Image (cartoon, rainbow, N blue to C red; front, side, top):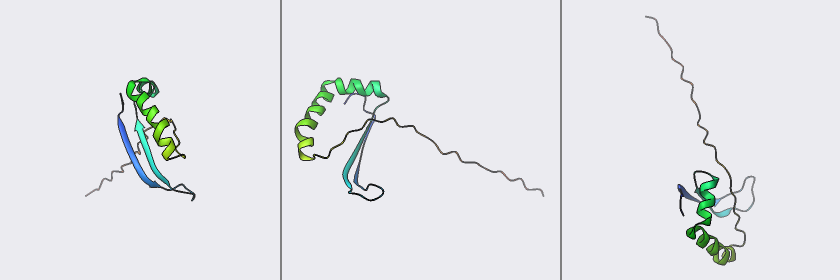
Length: 86
């Protein structure tokens, strides 16, 4: 699909606390919501939506879709320098 930056899948994802595991989680990343909207309106996006409606939803009735924003938070480390007197 146009503008797709990253596509990952995870298998056998377990809900916390407990619950039934998900067979598969797929994450598709675009730069922002506007790019995603253009991708969904493209011929490839329309074909994907049709495939979901015609096949995936029938084979896996529990399929859920979510749109969410991700913030990349980097962990900062504190370095302590020691000076030694001789």
